[in-house]
Length: 76
Image (cartoon, rainbow, N blue to C red; front, top):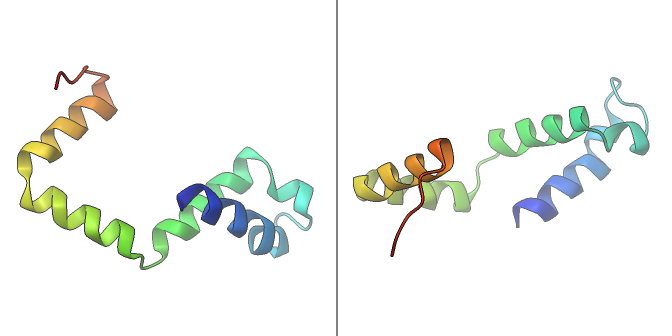
């Protein structure tokens, strides 16, 4: 979902902004970051559900932080 939505935003929204002006200008690192800002500002069930799970399960929250921010391997 997220990859498709990022691509859609770059192709349909970011490219129309004055800063970019064309599709090729939108398909850059800066265009990607702009699409990322847009998707984070949207209300979206995926993020809402994930946020609820992280609040409900603090161990999951801690585990994901360790994995994502320190690269700590997780043994199952």
